[in-house]
Structure formats: structure tokens, C-alpha cells
Image 1 (cartoon, rainbow, N blue to C red):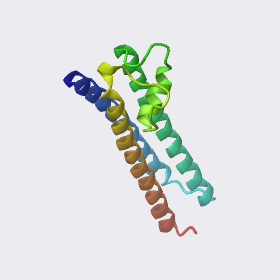
Image 2 (cartoon, one colour):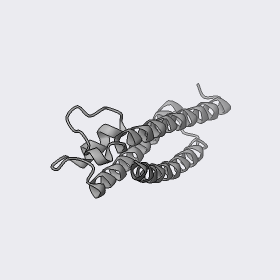
Image 3 (cartoon, rainbow, N blue to C red):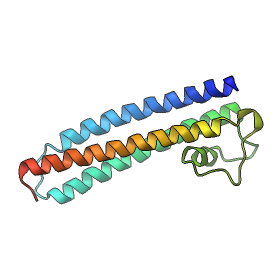
Image 4 (cartoon, one colour):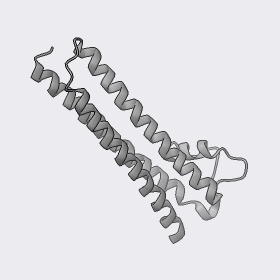
Amino acid sequence: MLRQLLLGGAVSLGNIAIHAAVMATVVGTARRALKWEPRRSQAWLAAVMVATVGVLMIAHVAEVIAWSLAYAILDAAPAGVDMLYFAFVNYTTLGYGDVVPVERWRLLGPMAAMNGVLLFGWSTAVIFEVLRQAMRSRDRRGNP
């Protein structure tokens, strides 16, 4: 059990590092982009939000790939299972249903789920922060 916790914790920390780098980049880029004065503030706001969410989705896919690589290296899923699918099912807390992990690595699924929930929450906070900055920037310029 300790081995599962240590390895799952290592993958989780790696994902937190990925997420932290992406979050810092997203917030910094949004701050710079929101200083521009576009003619159509609504369209600009939509573009900033779509870009923000798009980048965050890419970050989550990278994190799922990290989990899938860990599962493949550890041989944590039954033979013939698509590791990326297996990782997505865990990370998104969808639940198994059709794939069950091998006995000796059973704790990795819940650890991946916990990691996903935390990082999705963090992404939600960043999306809200970018929107808050955008609204504040728009109000300062007097745009409707």
C-alpha cells in the first residue's frame, strides 16, 4: 500500500507542477491581453475566455497522459486496456464500469480521481479569476 501511495503521490505532484506552470502562464497572459483596448469588448472577452478554457483543457489532457504513462509503466491495468481511456476514467471520476485495475495498484484510481478533482477545482478558480479581471478591465474603460 505504501508503494501505491508514494507512486501515486509522485504522479500527482508532477501533475500539480504541470498545472502550476500552466496556471501562471494563463493568468499572466490574460492580464497582459486584457490591457489591450479592442473595439469590440464583448468579442474580445469571449476570445480571452475561450483561449483560457482551451489552454486549461490542454493542461488536463497532459495530466491524463501523465497518469496513463504511469499506468503503462506500472502495468496497473489488465492487458489490452487502452491506458489513455483508463486514465481519463479515473481522472474525471467517471468510474470504471468496464475496466478494473489490477489488484496490486488499486489505490492509483482513487488517487488519480482526487488529483483530477483538485485540479479541476483549481482550473475553475482560474477561469473565474480571468473573467473577474476582464470585467474589471472593461469597467475601468467604461465599456458596456
